[in-house]
Length: 326
Image (tube, rainbow, N blue to C red; front, side, top):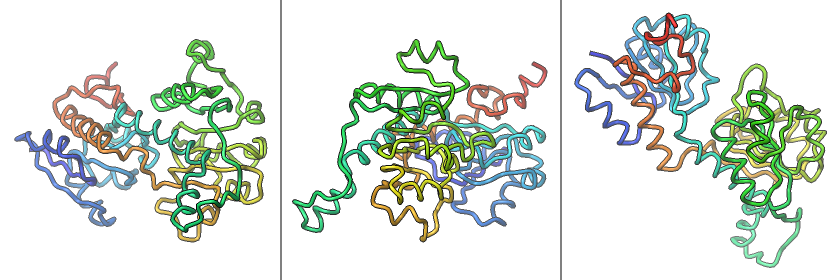
């Protein structure tokens, strides 16, 4: 019997897959304390996590753990080298949230362009004719730089092009000819491109090399009329420098689905700025997306137990039994 602990509430379609297995004993703990988390981890052969962190200390107390199934595609809270040393696979739900995050990104762009949140507040305050503040704008004709050309970034590029935007793409993992063949302008040096960018949108993972990649210096290269969109990870941006740029007119606006600290402190300076549109890390929250991700997250656990887990859904595929000698 395999013990599986869920630290996140799956969609019924994902739960059904796990519940149908007679060789799986399911436990569910939502928002566990550190003690509950460590205790459950030590008894499990598989765990499903959302944003919970797992490192060397936790793994050392989980001798039977075979797989950490991440509900999502980011894995910056998990120590991958430590998992590899302990022969624990880290599964992700690639393909489950691509469309939703790309749509949310465009939603943030449109909300920034049309000052949607501010306009809603004016109507509710019976200020129908008030039009003060920064000017609204169209997306068409603006130059957008898409940083990160993976599953989400490629969709964002297509959506931006459909809105009539001039699309630039930067991703060192993709050869320049491939980006150019897709019809976009390749960028190999972000700093060189930033002065001509109207919209900067981020779609790359958080790592030691990308942390605070958009810092005070990079922000200073953008036009004062530019917008920053981030639906990836808050840590990609120097948040203090961003708040300063927005407050001082060095940057026109921002649309953020992610912050450095989640949940954030109540005194976060971004909260005082009208030129910021915020959402609480919900780009992948549509019901359809939750179902797709739940099915994939559950299937990763099942396939690990059956020895059929697709390496394409694993961050460290070298730990899989059928690839250890590859």
